[in-house]
Image 1 (tube, rainbow, N blue to C red):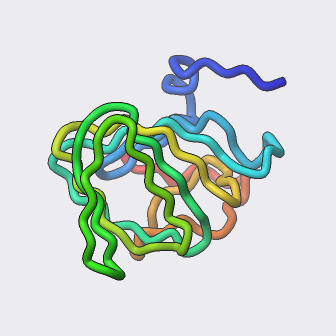
Image 2 (tube, rainbow, N blue to C red; image 1 turned 60 degrees about the vertical axis):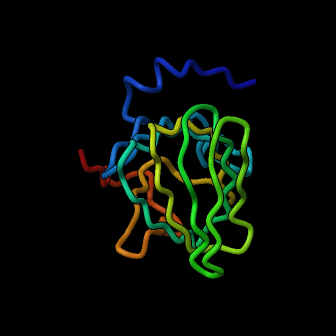
Length: 137
C-alpha cells in the first residue's frame, strides 16, 4: 500500500514547477502502478499549449474555471469543477485558466517525476531517474 500526503509532496522535489503551472507528483513510474497521478494547479491568465505525443492524460477539474481548445477541431470546452477531459488521441490543446485551476491528472505511461514540457508542449517518452531534474521556477 502507498500512502502519501499532498502537503509533504508539495514541500519536496516531487513538486515540479514550470511556466504557468505547478504539479505535485503523487504517484510516479517507480511506484510500478502503470500510471502516474498528479495534483496540478494551472495559473489564471496563462495560455498553456500542450501536445502529449508520448502520453495519454485524463484531467479532473477540482476547482476553478477556464477553457480547453482542441487544436485539431477548433472546439472550445468550458472547464469548471467536476468536468473531466481525456486526451485519448494525443490531442494538441490549449488550456486557458480564467481562475487558478486545481486538477487531478493521470498519465499513461507514467512519468518519472522530472518532466517539464518541451518546445512542442510534450513530455519526453522517458526521463532517467538518476539525472538532475530539469525544473524551472
